[in-house]
Length: 188
Image (cartoon, rainbow, N blue to C red; front, side, top):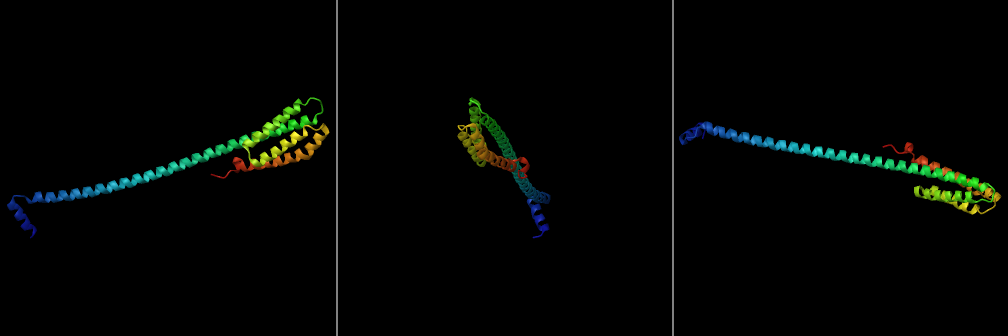
């Protein structure tokens, strides 16, 4: 049947052709609107997923930067603590050496200096590392032994045992500080 025939049948039924055409056009427009709506929703969902992924990546990156900053600050704090304790240990050794070299009946200065060496070597154990602590412990033990000897023997024992150990201590300290120093830290 042709369009003319369909139009004639519809006219007999009392339905104007324009109503039928309008109805078909409305259905087509609704189908197109629905397709456009689905496409817009898919595009919005894709944009939303992309934005979420970018936000998550940015968040992970910010957390990593924060972690690195905290780690760098911790490393700087440990390095500062080590430097301070190493300096205190060296100063207490200097004080003990002067007290050991003095002759006299008053040993209170020597005992006080020995106590400082003892305490300082234990603080070095707290800040580390082990290579520095082992040398500090060896020096402390040598100081314990020599403080009971006569002055001349103390000076000799210091020269034979403690002085070379202090050189080793200085080398170990320099190694620790140079490998931990922020200037030598890996680039971020």
